[in-house]
Length: 107
Image (tube, rainbow, N blue to C red):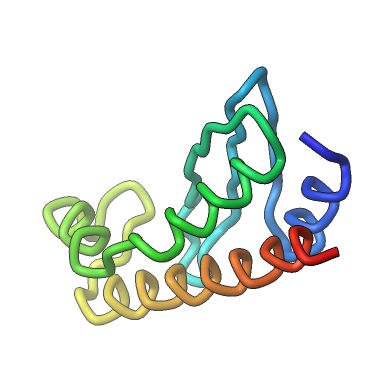
C-alpha cells in the first residue's frame, strides 16, 4: 500500500492497519459505534477500488437491523431513530472517504 493512501485515509479521521493484502479501516461513528471494515487488494489501486465498492454497497437498513435486537446494551443506543441516523452518518462518512481516496488515482 502506498503511504499516500494511508495518509489520505487517516486525514479523513479514520485509522488504518495494513497486513499483507488486507487493510482494516476504522473510526467511531457520531453515536459512538466502533465502526470498521476490511478491504483486500494486492495494489493501492485495488484497495481504492474496494474501499469505493464497500462505501457504495453499504446498506443502512442492514446495518441498523444488526443492532436492533441489542439496543440499549453494550453501548448501543436504545432509540431506533438514533440507530438509523447513525447508519446514515456512517454511509456519509464512507462516501466522503471514497471521494477522498478516488482522488489518489487521479494524481
